[in-house]
Structure formats: structure tokens, C-alpha cells
Image 1 (cartoon, rainbow, N blue to C red):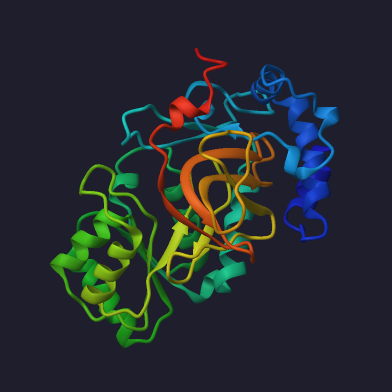
Image 2: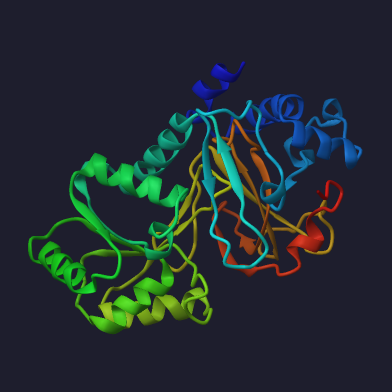
Length: 326
């Protein structure tokens, strides 16, 4: 059954998504002890869930205190860890099959941008590179290996500036992907004209700078780097897929990922498109952990399935679930 799912996930279509998600729900309800226990505690019997809108979403906080996995954890298991900048603990995502993660981010990049080998990648990810277990760094390393062009930059802004200007002069298709605070630091130190290149932020001040809104961040980077728009990447340790925005902070998912909006006052209630609520994500690539995640992010969904991220729900740990407190 598991191998059958692997073959179907990245072939998902709008017509096949719901049935596939339901089948994986039944599989995870049976094979994931943490998810199974959670369903029991909220009085949900899997066999009574007959449509996708009735699937319960596991609060993302469970990744901080439990082993959310359908497979036994052993020496072959990769553990991706989150940074603990909020002071509420570190999430651990136990990945039994890195092939699923690699297939997901490779196919998704090509879904949005085209062939990886056509791009030069410049990665400015200091907070992620300074610790172990970052899924973002793993993805960046793989993209760089497949491309063969580009590099990582810690604090060497001068070299990054020279390389980006060379990319522009030689008309290379270049993506500068950076964490928000580092992009601001770079844009303050070197107000380059990077028109024609793609500047992409992956969010997060990581305690290094005061938090600002995404529009404020994009406006600052556009002015200081002379680019017409800023792209964005939305991902997290607990997911094996990402969403991308080409401009204006409006994100789109790949065919195997879907966003819904939950009510902030009711963990089992739903908001209509256009209303603000908590982001709930189905990521079918999370086959070995849990595909149905209720995040602590606030967002808004649009009729075409795109969405925007508006901030974080600070009471998420209280709202989440104390049913399985350690």
C-alpha cells in the first residue's frame, strides 16, 4: 500500500486529490501511533470519515513533543529540526524516506520555475547554516548540486555582491534565496541594482531584527536592490513540500498540497475563502509522518486556491492540544 501511495502522490490532480488524501488518511490513522491516539482522544473513528473536509488535522505543536511517524525510527531515519526562536521548543520531523522529500522539492521547483539546471543559486541562509538538521539547507544543497552553479554565503556580503553583479552582467538566470534578516542586512550594506535577477525571501527575523510585515520587507528590498518584485518561499520543518509566491506574497501550492483555513476560535471549524484564520495544510508528501497539519500561522485563502500568510497565532500552543501533554 505504501509503495502504491508513493507512485500516486506526485501524479495527483484536482480530480484524484480528494480520494488519494482519504486513502492516505486511513493509512496514517492506522499506522501513525501519535495520530491514531489523537483521533481517539477527539472521539473520531477513522471509518466514519467519508469526505476530505471531515479529516482532522494534527496540531503542529505535536512535532515538538512526540515522534510523529508511521515508520519505526532507526539509524536510517533522517531528523529535520526547526530553529527555536520563539522559545517554545524545537520541532522534529522524522523522515524515513528522503526520496519523498527530494522528489517533492525538485518537482515543485520545476512546477513553478522550470528546469533547475537553467538556474544559478545564491543562498543567504546564515541562521540555518549555523545549526544542524535544517530541511531548508538540505534542499538548497541539493538544488545547488543539480544546478552546478552558485554557492552559499554566510556573512561574506562583498563576495555575494560581486557574484550577483557578475550574474546580471552575464545575463544568468539567478535566484538569490535568503532569510529575511540577512537579506535586509545585505541590502543595507550593498544597494546593488539587481534588476533582472530573482530575489526570494523565506521569511523569519530569527530574533535578529524587529519583525515587520511582508509588504514592508518586500518594499524595502525592492527599493534597495532595484527589483520589480520579491518572490517568497513558504515551508516549514514539519512539511516536505513548499509553496512559492512569484510576487505580492500570494502563494501557490503544487498539485499534491492543499490549503484550507480554520477558525481561530474553534479548532474544528472552517472559514470561507477571503476570511482570515489558521492555515491547515494537506501535504501528501508527508506520507511517513502526517499529511494533515494544523499550523500556527494565520492566513487567507482565495477562490483559485492561492493563499497569503498574514502572521502567527500567538496562542497556538494553548489552542493546539493538551490532550497528550508529556
